[in-house]
Amino acid sequence: MTIRVPSEAAGSRVDAFLSETSGDLSRSRIQQLIKDGLVLVNGAEVKANRRLAAGDEISLEVPEPEPVQITPEEIPLDIVYEDDDVLLVNKPKGMVVHPAHGHLTGTLVHAVMHHCGDSLSGINGELRPGIVHRIDRDTSGLLIICKNDRAHLALSEQLKEHSITRVYEAVVCGVVKEDEFTVNAPIGRDRKDRKKMAVDPDGRRAVTHVEVIKRFKKYTYVRCRLETGRTHQIRVHLASRHFPILGDEVYGPRKAVTAFGGQVLHARTFGFIHPSTGEYMEFSAPLPESFLEALAWAEKQN
Image 1 (cartoon, rainbow, N blue to C red):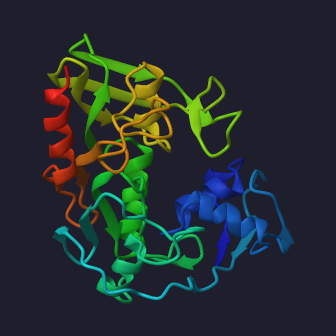
Image 2 (cartoon, helix red, strand yellow):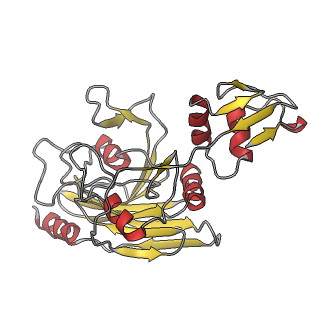
Image 3 (cartoon, one colour):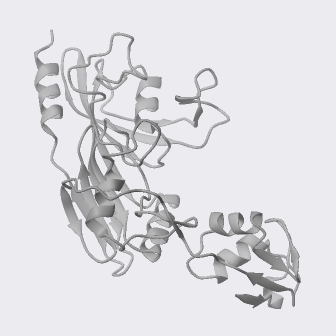
């Protein structure tokens, strides 16, 4: 692909200009192509922050996506909604979303690849099963998968703009006195333990809105609406307010309750603007049995 820079674009960064003019390529993808030497300005390699002049000639080479080495597995999926663009699933507690060290089989990705076949997005240079966002292994609930690049980019943009509705429910340790409160605290890697996240003034902006559903003598049933979506955000934010999620062995008390298979946290509601129709759609997933058991247990504690 060859593009000549018009006069009105003079002074623009090359990565910003290409992300606006090259169709379905995200800015991060453009930046990676620049690093790989696949973007030339007037025949020479450049950096992403190179300022353009009117008449500059940009050549852009986009390689075909490379398939990831994952063997599809026939694993049942709880499908909440599906069409040609997206797949919305209710992930069970205990299922890992994406293959990683120690979890090379049996993930949601393996199941999605079996269900969707070739109908998957090819973002960031890999043929990937449209994973736009993730939820933790021991968190249950709604997760959206994109079947093509257009849908993937549209949903990614909605995530960046914080226009997607993501509501979680949780049981936390302690009695929350306020009916509603907001945690606005940046999150970054824990400086003492890189496997964990922590509230950090140098971290990325993170905002969680919390509402009490029901109080017990020692625990509280809450609803959390994400304004941003950082790794472990709800778990870190609630723990920072001294209300760690029941069963959370990472951010909770040392003697965490283990009867419920990890943190009692459920992605209850997911709402988004459909990438093809422009219609706002919202779905909810029922509380899993383990969550209901945790509620019943919490209510009995004196």
